[in-house]
Image (cartoon, rainbow, N blue to C red; front, side, top):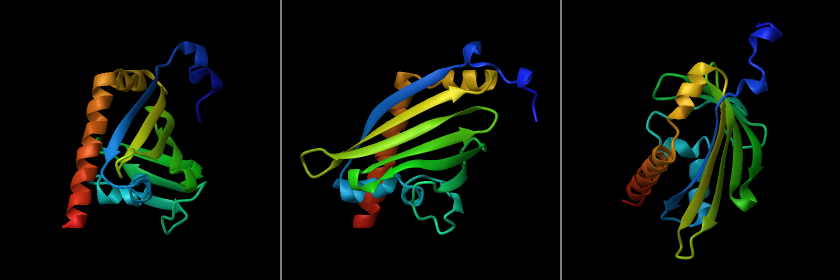
Length: 163
């Protein structure tokens, strides 16, 4: 365990990034929102295979905990800190050990044409210089492209389910 002096104080100026954007989903919120749950993401995220810690069956509940491994091979640990399915809203705490941590929030609203706009906010803080370097890449343009990829992958998944 590190000694307190080995932990960078908040005044060290670690990078914090907050990015918000929207993902259009060609389905109503009652259909779209479950796609942003740990089990629902398996339908559209390549390689997404959560290891459910609680509850073991993967049900989405407040306090639920799971881990994933990203395309970069890094583990991420998640806790569902706010679960409001009646509002089509979920907020996760997400920790990537030795890199960064923060929250991911998704809130879905009807778009007025039978579809959904999912507002996605990442609020992340670096834990060290590696995290600072990682978050430097989270530019507005990068985030816009990141969510555009989500939009394409979700559309493809919905199209394949309709076929």
